[in-house]
Image 1 (tube, rainbow, N blue to C red):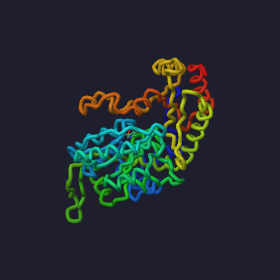
Image 2 (cartoon, rainbow, N blue to C red):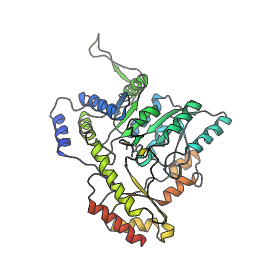
Image 3 (cartoon, rainbow, N blue to C red):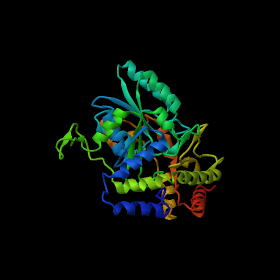
Image 4 (cartoon, rainbow, N blue to C red):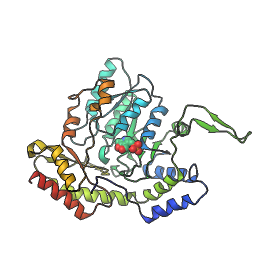
Length: 382
Ligand SMILES: Cc1ncc(COP(=O)(O)O)c(C=O)c1O
């Protein structure tokens, strides 16, 4: 079965993990800060905190920024549930803004209108959480202007886009956002099995993140060697040295991984460009895509086949496609809790109706790519 994404593990990864398994500390050891240092180098942020997963990273960001009951945080419906769920964890309220129709990231004009509308109602927006969807960065220069004008914090959910660039700068997120979250789930650019990270340039906030990822506990054993003190209500969101050993080793291959993802994307681009009622992913000028996903848009109605049958037939041919994402505001929990309704974010909803994530990962062979292309064309009678 060809899946939409999976990890690539080589002998160096195995050796790095084995070394740690044979060492004294398999967690809370030196590999965590080593991985954090490497992440800082890669992303340009001053501080990194490696944590148990990307969802924990987002939760900690909300806590560090002091989100609480009644705060409004803006985000988009086209992201993984974790982006928006993590807002609710802190007691705040997620409100949605539609995506741009070309790049599938937050629509900055609609965002500005929403902020102004809320302001008129005397409601202040505390932060904006933007996902660099599929590996394509948001319109960060415009977002930054908006955040300065309205004094709103910017969080980059960067779980898809490690390795992306703006103006040839892979450090772009560190220039524009206050915080960034990463995920190292096996389908992402690099993996630690499960894992994530919080990135920031603010020393105080970084300290808070590190405090909260380990029970809010400080070890002050200058006088009494056993002493530890709990200063805040924290969590166990730690990551192990075993995972960080894998992370350090994987990070060395990031460039190679992205290069391969780009070559697969180019192959799909060539196969599907200029076909009526199909849209390949567009890239904003001077942007570089990390292709965590390859979101192909197919107007199924025009091809006379339902998305359901299309998926089923692809699966019968051993190709397991995915959809990213069912718009969050259409999830039953959100409908019930926040009274969100279908028809409210039409660009996102139309995107969902047409989107198909094609297989894209380092080990995807050329003949497998051709199999995916051939089967899609056959089903659509192209
Ligand atoms: C955009 C986005 N945000 C957050 C997450 C959560 O990351 P994790 O699965 O590591 O908790 C994911 C994971 O799929 C994601 O795609």
